[in-house]
Length: 104
Image (cartoon, rainbow, N blue to C red; front, side, top):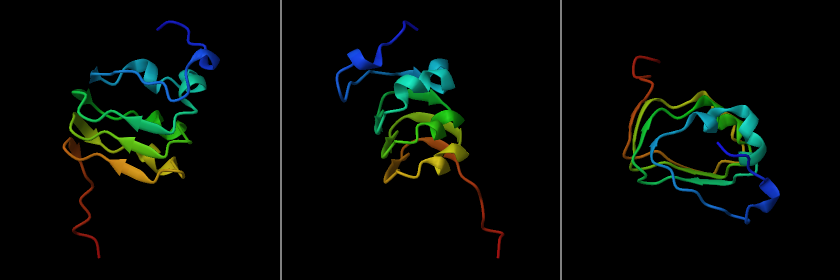
């Protein structure tokens, strides 16, 4: 991935992503660039694979919109680290959920 200069990016910049979530997204060294991200809007982008655990490092996220993709696996526990998160939409994916029906 080419070097990004965060100061040269327009406020609220947008990039298009499809396929699986790339390795660089889950690389913590890139959080210098993604760390200011407040809205992750990847609705219906044909994304496959799992949500990286490192999403929990994006602590300023207020909205995570990943609906209408083909995401699989478990929801990462890193989502619990997002104390500013007010909107989470994972609908229309193939994520597994924890079955707590046997608990009392």
